[in-house]
Amino acid sequence: MQKLLDEVVRVAREAGQMARAAREIRTLQVMMKSSPQDLVTEVDREIEAHVVERLARILPEAGFLAEEGTVREGSDAGLVWVIDPIDGTTNYVHHGRFFCTSIALVRQGVPVLGVIYDPIHEEMFTALRGAGARLNGFPLSVQRERRLHEALLATNMLWTQSFGARVVREVLGTLLRRSRGIRSLGAAALEMAYVASGRFDAYLSMRLSPWDFAAGVLLVEEAGGVATDFYGGSLDVLQKPSNGFLVAAPRVGEDISVLFAEAAKR
Image (cartoon, rainbow, N blue to C red; front, side, top):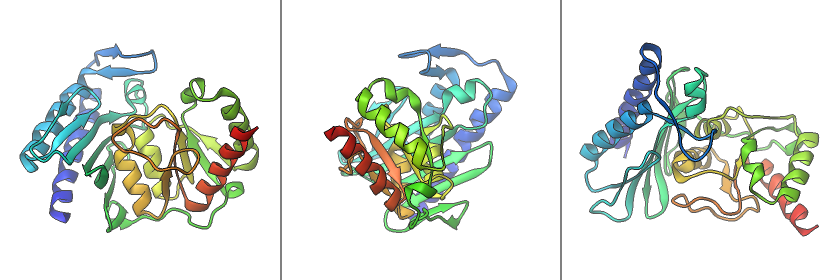
């Protein structure tokens, strides 16, 4: 698997550098998808086509599930690449610094390889199932013993509009009071990579798709963290979460899940 990971790292680096270069040399064509907060550019689509073409040569039996519309079954029905060519497109459009390319290989519903590349900060986050997570080759670990009162959290507030308004208000209010703070980078995959590296202690959201989190889930798990729904339940990395999405250092994740469970009972 290490040889495969090395090849995927090269593809992710190509994709990230394409994104960075395109923004510097041309005016982006920006289109709205489902809402004013859900944008796509021609660069997203060009990079997705490039990544799909490269990965199809590397592992021809695998299928594809990608943000900008590439859905393809492979000869091995249990093997699928899950791709976000530019995670954080709104940041990208506004010349922000937080965006990335995310690539995961999922086997029988379980992510086994994950790569998240940030071309602005030249950070390559990688993980193999059972072999740990790394940043530019150096091992990663979540802050295993940290509790909520010591934690820096990350989230995307847009999801609060569509998930149990009362529960969300209660839990977010509690998190604001009990944690060290809440941040939002606007790039879900990158925020999960930051959890894996210990920069954040949890990331929670609702409005995510598999390409947003497949690689990030593996990174966090291989760094010693947990990936669950809001209540500590399991996730299906090929489906949108219906009960929320949470990646965290173990004890922080437990603290947050308890808050959701208690709020839901009231």
